[in-house]
Structure formats: structure tokens, C-alpha cells
Length: 269
Image (cartoon, rainbow, N blue to C red; front, top):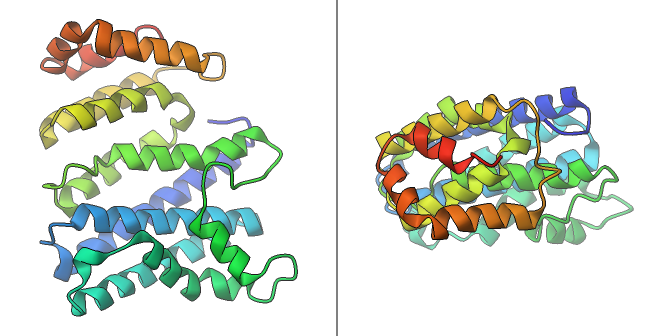
């Protein structure tokens, strides 16, 4: 799925999936927040905390098991944070910066305390401002790997569907997330379309599942990854043609079979 060792990338995404599954199950068992209007935001903020710590620890230690352990601790402490602000009736005020600060002090601070090369405040600053350019590893694919994962979970779980409960997101995790992770380097164009659809149209859960099925079934059949040979301008052109120039066709197909829609959207890929 990328140019760095395949076995390594597969280990990472498999472990990442397990962490995500366990996180959703833990949230599901936290009954006090199940009916909160801000549940989507609560889930996403925790996801971001886990992702940042996992990426940072893996970068620092080059040890997948250590990164997994820290990520697991992260969601435990995040749930502790959620319960604390819930008991103070402040759940509607949850902020990502405060959450990552809380879990950092409980996890990464202890791991890297006393490092000569990097102070704890620098470590905190790096995690708080973690972006696409943070992982400074020579191999270019490593630089793209975690941003791709982040983009995937930001889109796949349809966070702006605020009416969905934890069960819908758990279903997406259990039935799609791992398969999508294993196609990470072939999904860029699909995620562009999916992101656009989410922002401009409202799909019910059954229709969304149908669309996810069609995308992953089509993507898994793509044997040769062309993403590295397709320029950004070409991707943008395809997107604009399908979405704007051929809008009538697009909207007609969106109302019909998801398989037909995906086949049409990816006809140039």
C-alpha cells in the first residue's frame, strides 16, 4: 500500500484499526454521553487525540507496540477527561486543545520526560501543532502516510451527520475502516468526491452504506495504483468536470445505484 516496507505499513494499519475499534467500544460503554447533542464532536476530538499521540510516539520510538500502548492509554485518559467535564456539566464546552493537553500530561510527558534532545514543552508544542509536515523521515511515503489516515477518518465517519449515534459510527468502523485503511494510497480521488457529497447532500445511513460498499469494492479491484502518476491538476480537472460541468448527470446518478455512480466518477482513474 506504499513504497516503504509493506509488512510495516500493514502492521501499522492493522494496529490502528484495533485501537479505533477499542476506542469506539469504550465510548459506547460510557452511557453518560450517549444522548449528548455534541456526540460527533466528542468522538472526533478523541480520535484526533489518539491519532496525534500514536503518530508522535511511533515517530519518536520507531516501535509499533509502544505507540499502540500509548494510544490505548490516550483513549482511557480521554474518557477520564470526558467524565470529569461531564460531571461539571461542561461537556458542551469540550475543546481539542484542552483534551490533547490533558492526555499528553498523562502519557507522552512520562515517556519522554528528561530527554536531552527535546524538552517536554517542545514535545507538547509538536503534538499540539502536529500537521502534515511533522514527520521528518527521509522516505517520502512516510511523510504522506499519517496525513492520509487522518484524511480518511475525517471523511469516512461522516462527522457532520450530527443525528447519528455511536452505533452507526461503530458499524462503519467494524465493516469499512480496516478495508479502507488497506487501500489508503488508492483513495485520494474517492475521498474528494465523498467529502463533497457529505458537504452538499444529506444521505441517510442505508444510502451511505451503499455508497461506501461501492467505493471500496471498486477500489479493491484496482491493481495498479496510479496516484503517483496523476498530477494534482488532473485530479482537480476530473473533479470539477464531474461535479460542476456534468452536475445534472452527477445528481441523477446520486439518486440511483451507488455502483453506477462510483463507476462513473472513477471512469478516468
